[in-house]
Image (cartoon, rainbow, N blue to C red):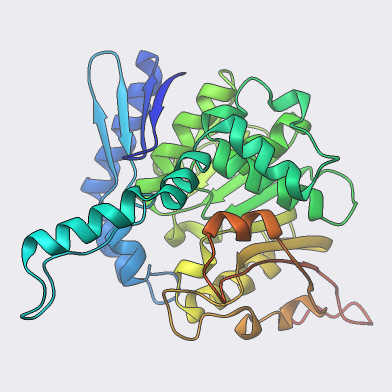
Length: 348
């Protein structure tokens, strides 16, 4: 898989796959339709996506030609201003002028440019972490997705200073930049990604472009080569979380997608992560302190009871600044270690 180009305006990414890679993805897409996976996930009692995420995922597409794969994400369009929705309000021309002024005025335009330019993002990052640079292991690929890369770098810098994980689980990994980050630092690491079906194609393509020889298992292969040393990274759907053995993972994480779920779904995932974490393993959340989208979704309402420990919270200033000057929106880095109650009883 070769990374070809990326256009942030429409969040479009182009890859050049090998025939085997293209066929693997086509087999996966056929599985999604044959098994009516969308209906299964939408009806799942624990992990069904919020209406907001369902809308975004529904605008995500993969297009195949004889040489390229084009991916378009529905989740990361630039900020928009609705026009023509006022009842008896402004005339159309006035609304459009207001929209264009909002989009192109200096500060907004400059922030949009900085948010997708790797050089400016690196300068921006160093305002908060002047001592931290891009890791040499990441130099070849970090600029392909620079915005999530620097958010992953901040989360890594803020982490408790513990050894690199040998096993990792990420819920909502998106393009798998965080998985690539950790695997670049520890090539022996194995990872499991739990995500919605549309997004998994992005993660597969990106990981194959960064690590051409990586062994990936897609959800249609669940149970067929997704255990032991047969896959370096396995992708699972929310309906397949039972394939992850209990107490099998050193490190669990979620970055910037808990904030897009209902609080009930967040807490179901937190309980799932607590079951698969080894004693002494850590769970990391880097999300909005209070969701801008979903009522009741706030860090204070996260259920950490099964971890038998209180999470350590600290601000994530770089990720917060990326959001823009919106009062009350703060990204919080919350990390908790899995502890087993005294006496060895496991209450999970």
